[in-house]
Image 1 (spheres, helix red, strand yellow):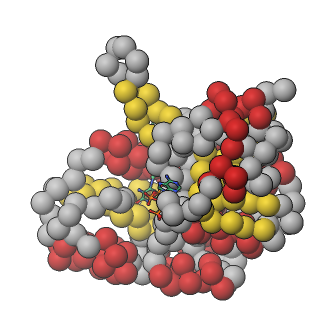
Image 2 (cartoon, rainbow, N blue to C red):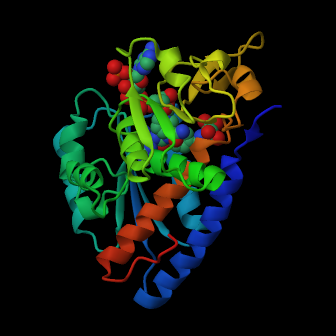
Length: 296
Ligand code: NAP
Ligand code: L37
């Protein structure tokens, strides 16, 4: 039997509707809307699309969006100065500097300059550390979205065998931390992993965050497993010169074996954006000294 489709678009839509209600309450109790500042340096087309959808979703949820677009030859010092200004701006609850940054800018220094209380991407070492020790952290949006889909699909994750392919600070590592926090048994695989197919076949939960189109084949998947495909890869379509998006999982094969699977597009991507709004509201409540609503 073919796997159930995990509809990230629908889950994100439902989440954004709930967040809009919380955003209204926030506005009513503080007299101002929660605010997200996005910073885009250069003209990477994919980053441009993502940042624009983030701004649109922010406004649609009843929050304020401040968007900053800087030229590709921006100096690091000027970007750091903008981050400092946003740190001080009382209207700004969340700061997102879209990666990747141009070569002349050291991304680690920029992330380091963001006030951890406004770091809605969860990339600052303070937030990574808090996540690792199980304290209140702002958690990276993509793994948070994956966890939301997994819990909706499976309920309790405790004792599940989870395999995460990828160990980036943005996706793989925080994903593993979140799964560990849910008491799954977690394996992190990467480019040096020996016999990746065999490791994957143990997984009740398989999260692929690699950036290699359709690398995970159908016969790497344990029958009935839940597969979360984080990969967003643009590949040339067959004839017409257009491109199409594929994940890190060979979807048609995997679908025959898995119990449930996220599609690309329409899976993890929309959840990433919804979780950014969530993190902005969390940051806004904490900064205003308000209790963060339980169901956020
Ligand atoms: P990344 O920083 O390039 O990390 C990729 C990871 O995959 C690395 O840990 C790497 O191992 C591992 N890897 C590479 N080749 C491998 C192989 N042949 N076998 C096993 N592991 C391998 O990428 P990322 O930022 O984590 O993103 C991963 C994917 O998710 C990309 O397709 C990206 O576009 C997508 N993404 C999607 C969203 C979303 O919202 N849907 C958000 C962010 C990213 P090493 O560490 O050993 O090099
Ligand atoms: N928070 N996210 C944050 N900070 C960054 O610095 N680079 C980066 C980042 N990554 C990111 O925004 N990724 C992302 C990827 C896909 C989508 C959104 C965000 C998304 O909406 N994907 C759609 C398809 C969009 C398209 O057609 O290109 C999807 O359905 O998957």
